[in-house]
Length: 81
Length: 384
Image 1 (cartoon, one colour):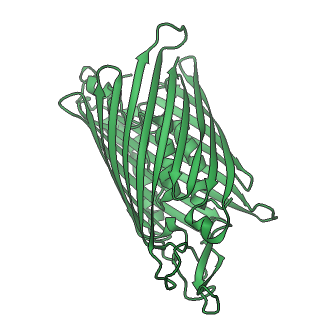
Image 2: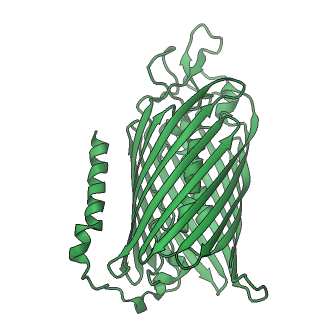
Image 3: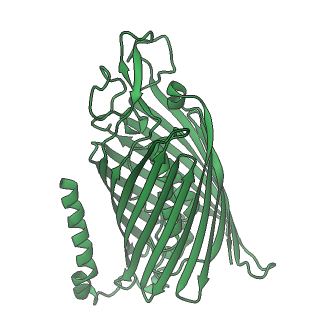
């Protein structure tokens, strides 16, 4: 029951962020300008540089451990495309 | 057969991650790069050897569409402590296929995927959906994902057949904090319903009439499980060209397992072609409420499990890797090549799972089990 409430709360939060939350925050100026994102664009700043190999490692962890989920595995980069 | 249930059930999630890894999970909403990825993987340790290929091909169509296909094989040779205790060594093969489709519209990337996994005694089908949106000057990326899967669990040489249904709900946020720092947050809830255990796995109970002092009976899992996992990742670009990553994940589920994962990694380029990396990972979990290494008598509880994955234990992983990348001008149609070799060394120490293959000990006094494993991944990626 507790976990269900927690899940519902997080989903509501996400929906808020996507809808009402965005409207008021849409005016925010990016504090890291596109021309300041060269370090972030470096491949070493990727959260998922080894896509297939990283996923395989998550599979190994999931096989040997009780925990599962929230592995992420991708992301990073400069957001400059 | 007789592979840990979790091992098999989560194979399809691996493919999910592979499919979406290049297509929008907590990443900026752009079409993934066109590439083909050929990987050889090998896991060796605790009496198990699992190896095989993995091939991923991705092709973009115009500026808005991307399609991908993935093929994955595990060839298993098993003589683990569980297998040696209650069964005999075996070999088997499992194959997975998946297909993905991505659609990009302005700053929104939508992805759909299908995964199919087949073994001689196990089948899994699943559908995956995700939507990824860039916002706030592209400093923030939000991804929402949902998966639903159906498993059919069988038993070799028998009519045994049971079903399970699994659903995953995912939220991922990637946030640029400064020009040198990136934050990632992931949350995932998973709900399972149906036959969740491994039909081959057994639990042991004390039996004074048995010459060895104990006997085995089939394990019985609850028919539902809900888990929650939240993870924070911080990536920082050092004052020289190198990066460090810190990661923490908290996990809990309705079976009473609570787990903490901490990981740190360092990535260091050498010249313009090579990238070296190292990582260390710590994992600790409590046991499931109904887990026991040795039950006092037969049918001691309505649910019974002696899977070491549900016991209380600690794991350490040490990893190193080296990659070489080069641009290609000689062949038309190929832009870039990348080779990588990654090696991980894992250690597991169990707090309440005993090694029954060790003889000469009183029942329940056998040495606690521990084992090491080595994981190798070698792959080449061709960008075109």
